[in-house]
Image 1 (spheres, rainbow, N blue to C red):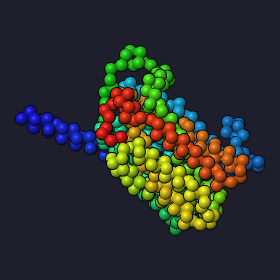
Image 2: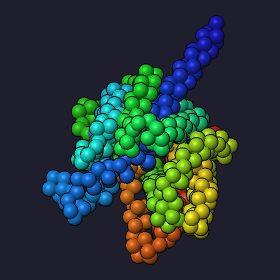
Image 3: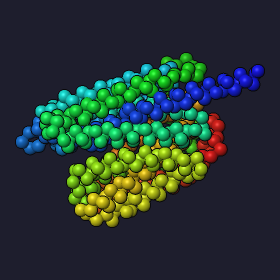
Image 4: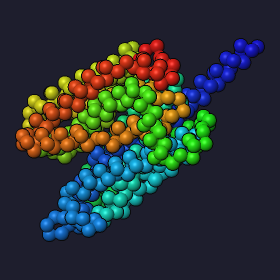
Length: 451
């Protein structure tokens, strides 16, 4: 009878875990639309046009009296959002771990970002300051929410399930991004048949991403549950966020192998983020491709990233997450090498390049997240994932800087794109040197059979 009770309890726990995992996937489904439709496709060109309409005769706008070229306003707004996110994440991460109440903080961050994105419907005329403000709020809120969302992974999935669960989350996100991008492109390209101006169509696409984000965020917020935090000393319980961040950094120094993984991730992920952000520039300026071709390539990346994330999740079960990530870094290097030789004015080959990026994009990010989750000491998930997210968001300026300097020196976007190979080669070497099984044990976590 006792054995039956134990089995029933285990079955109930497994069912509850599966239910929570399915809810967790839906946050990727909810927020990835923002990254795809807003940041990657529509907001940059539209906010730049709004800023240009407000510019003076010399092409400058003057936020807070500071002269800024209208064409640079979007990039500066993105940079400011990164600074805000880096300042806020340690505060929220420390609060989440101190109280164990991640869900209210996740809800606050998600709906702040969704509301700011929905508010982009009101961008028009010369309201570039409103656009910059909403971008900063939405982007920073997304970073904070993703940090909290990622920190749930080690709590909802045992070690042997994390690669698959993380990969499914990324796949859900890319699937949602592709689905909504198709609908947005139908509206945008056929705006006249819908009786809309081009600007109105763009504003509807922007706002729809915010509504989608807010609507589907309800699912994870209903299914995820808070865990009571472990016992804290009086000093820990009352520590302000930045004092707690300093304590987290000191604690991470006690786990040098976790820091070694973070350094490797910082470098190769910077290369990934730069390829994503600069591929359209390479396609338009160096290869002479049109906007419709570039948007089609973004859509192809989204679709194939779903299959890539799931496939690499399966490969990780066979070969381990570390080896699969290393294989993806080799694939990134070969893809960039092929991109260097792409002929101008040949969209078919650019789509082939986009396919290569899509197949390794989701999996390399998903498996990096799941591998890091094994290296986090129990009870410090949100704090450590704030450091992980800051590595993702806060240091993503190195790749664009190298890309820009290389172009400035050589005058060639081909040289600029091939320079990014350095991030994948260095990241490969650093990751290969991390003994992940020992790192997991040092963090106090059970070591999976295959990692």
